[in-house]
Image (cartoon, rainbow, N blue to C red; front, side):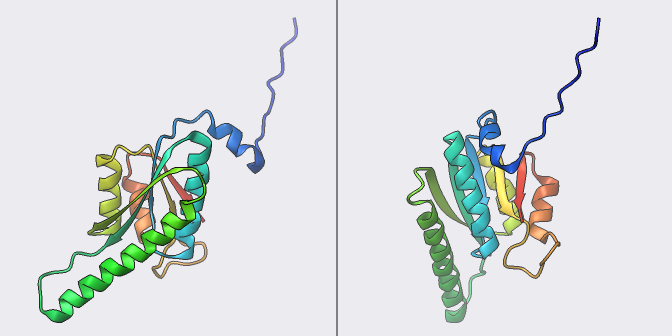
Length: 160
């Protein structure tokens, strides 16, 4: 009796859509900060959702602004307006892709809010960029991405 050799199977990037069909991906959370990289991660999440018939929720997190005078109110208003612009751009990217898509403007620390949203919204996966609008660049991983990667209870896909 001879032994049957094990087949070594290697997958190329062209095969990943086929492999995704076997994954249970229903709800994908994508934090965006308006940077080019965060929108590239959103594009990947939309593609992924297209293959799995999943739902993408895109969030943008703005800081809490303490009560104050007219300047503080104007600053808060500008944060909200800028956040809505970011989410409109995100919606436009998903618009013609035939994917279930929603957006949310949230307040707080981006990493903490993303983790809370992932847990409370019962998301299956988080898809985000390795860096965003912060100072990390090149081969570095940003502080928000690093924190989410370390603390998340659901799989995190980092897009470079």
